[in-house]
Length: 294
Image 1 (cartoon, rainbow, N blue to C red):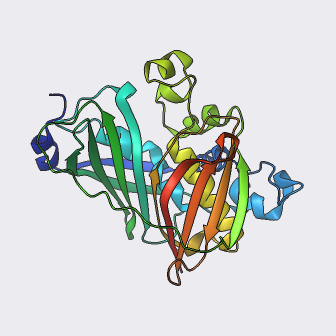
Image 2 (tube, rainbow, N blue to C red):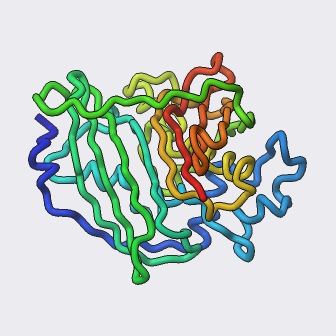
């Protein structure tokens, strides 16, 4: 069997060095739509609020940048772990959490330590749980927890794992907004380090069961966090403490994401978000999405 759960979870932690600078941050922000038109901004490329994402002299770092910083993507590192040998065409991103220990610097050098805490058996699929902890000379920076769904790799007799879902508040959302995904968004986003051909190569996408390439789940993840920071957190990225989601459906470049946002859900310091594809009758995109903030 391509996945040896016992070998993967008992393997020694793997470490690698990460480095990034303002160009990496700017490219990531552009890849999730910074500087692009939104219903709220008539001239986004020169809007002072957008320049915080795109201009090096005013730059701050969205916490979801942690998923690509220094090319140290948890997905790529986890799929090369001992005991794991899977077909990329069978791989989907199941869920993601980023916990921020302090604001991310515009430039940095850090050490990433990666482990596989669990491999869950969903009968017809396996879910690989990856953890990457990143620290620099001043201490911990962030922790990424990633769930990778691998079709056809279940049935090995392992634990099924958790399946809890988070109910949305039983009231109207406090905010609504939409974010258009450009036709070339996946081509731009992949330059931050996610080279899976599923997001660019039509032939590979068909092998994976899709009519055409799909957007990276982590791109939707970044687009959503930026929208919430801009509309619900006063544009202050440093207020984000943790951000978690479950990838509930695909997005095709050219579509529009519809976001419903609930503040203080169900308590202060917590925002819930539902993200759907507006062009496909609000088909689910991100579910169980929570942002913890100061």
